[in-house]
Image (cartoon, rainbow, N blue to C red; front, side):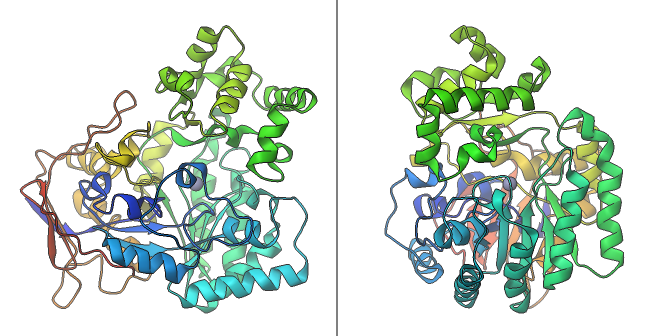
Length: 470
Ligand SMILES: [Zn+2]
């Protein structure tokens, strides 16, 4: 057995799911003892003004209501999650709550109001600010707005994490923007799920890493995280141009049902993805309408063929019927670049996923295999000699993230530190979840201790949960 510190998932979206399935099986069977939630600009709290939670959170039933960080935290304490939880405040919560979903820039008074609310959240225990600059309304935000907000997090010793404006063509400019925000605000910085998306951008990998290295050498505390898969996963409407998402979900749906807007949207989508190869990299994940269930796990080109329409029309049909609740796996990353990025000393591991469970309320959708497999998959590669050695692989999951996210006395095994401990069998450790059958727990984590309490023993849940809001 290998005995090591419990793993820190630096980029999780489990926020509200922890309230539904506090035992967090997909995560803890990977050896994860701490989840950093509230990433990509969307957090469980605060819920203010007209902010709409992501659709997969909004349609669930919860054991209680909350609006503020303090209320979310109290509810979380009540359900006692298995892993520890670190919360970041989503920029979209603030901007949608104070300004709305329009492209209009916030007035100075609105900026002050967002800063005031962020401050309150940090005082209630949040640990930083996250942005999702491809999602509405974050997509409309200028760097100055982000710097002002991040400076509030910086004053509290917080971190700024960013799903950047571009992970493809404008990757380098986006990394530079992120670093600038770190420099202006004094925040520690995390580039979320670092990748070079799209074949024509694969050549950017060394420049991307060098840009971060230079910033680090100049004293900016910037790092990155990554999951060990070459496809990402998000809602299909991320493909939509910003104008189509202005005003919120109901407005987007209305546009889909208005022939003029739909035609314009169709044209914009075709302009952005003109070749068959562009569409070939998309596989449908979760759907919500019964008529779309059969398409889960199916490549978009097959869906289109089955419907007898072009891929672009298949997308519009799926999304309209599912009321924007269609997710997809987006291939188009380079395997070589993935291993290159993961081997870089400042890059830590993440799942970029919310927790799931093979049974119960969180077993009904069609998630990306990274939900269940990221950490064992990377360790397996390490044990088999296909990436960095085991001590370095473990460091990327433990002390590196604990230091960067300022988690005192975690991520290490030493006398007096918190007892978050993962024990795994290196001969058995493996991920089983795949694109054809995602809801499958990883194997090989034999024992898991969170805050000194046995959570898994002999490969089975003990029923005890001792995670804390950190
Ligand atoms: Zn993201």
